[in-house]
Length: 251
Image 1 (cartoon, rainbow, N blue to C red):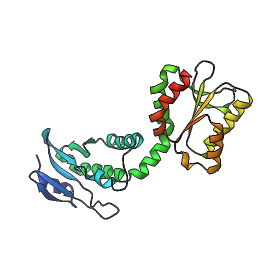
Image 2 (image 1 turned 90 degrees about the horizontal axis):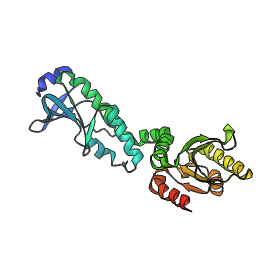
Image 3 (image 1 turned 90 degrees about the vertical axis):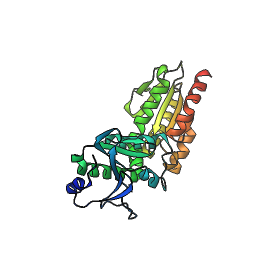
């Protein structure tokens, strides 16, 4: 049951503003960089009247959308990770969770943490995608090409310096797949492919970039001149990669 006096006793820097019958905005000293107060609301849980529902009524995502869109699968994965790691739920943009009244104070801090992380999704997303680029790539490759007996971290010339991230061992001309997330990796891929060519290995090289435009002009030129096929981003590969590989197999 919602008892505002009891909730105030748990948190001495708090007040409430009724938005409609049974729904109250929580006024707490947590602010966005532009000075706006965090949007938090409390009401009885619609599924259990002994619990309280703390939510943002979709206003955090609305504020985020002013300068950042969840317009790729990777960004959405980062967002979902923030929600699940903080034991929240999201429905039609509304972020919420249910809590016992005695735990209301900790719920305020929990919601504040979620709002802060989502508000900074532009930074978190870049960091997470950088960290998880190869995990995302690996997952997609095994999901889409598992039937081709994917091999990982193969050494065509038996040397660790010339490693292939993923190999599709197709007939006598396998496809060597490389993930590239920085200039150092781009240089290693160029060197590997040139060495494979010198040894006259039969293969086709496929490069998936985290962000092709982030490479130096020199590395963009060298890898373009060396690789058989490139995708400028993981999202591009997810959209077109399966069709490309199927064409290569059929050729």
